[in-house]
Length: 211
Image: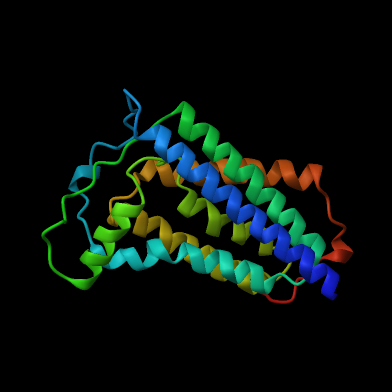
């Protein structure tokens, strides 16, 4: 990648991060002031225990974004990936506003343990809204789709990360199971649409690894 391409790549990445922050926190502010919320929980979910260790998986979503920035060294692939992130995030923001869901989180203010403390401070930053669908699951899953025809081995890694984060968001009481399934569905729809609207020739892709 040339210096000019690297500069464009950096600009694309900064723009998508700023878009995420603006959209997520705006939807979160609106979500906290809603007069009603939809219940998407399954009957057995109140029996699922809170396991603070899984905050490690929840927080690893940021690693997924950084890895994508580092690993993709083809500007065409990166640009289409960022278009996918933008489209997928926009769909999530719209659904956050149309189908407000609020998570019932445990009171851990007086609990012990490093992971519990970490989770507690995360709770302070991230309000219990913007739940359905789960952007935390959508982002690594997007990485899985982007890398599939580019660097297959890393796509497998992102798939494992998606699974770990999907389990984590449920065990740290940040999302319901339907939030996870919704994220997979919305991201898949966005990917199929962008793949058709923003085609890249197979010759432009590098499939360098196999699972």
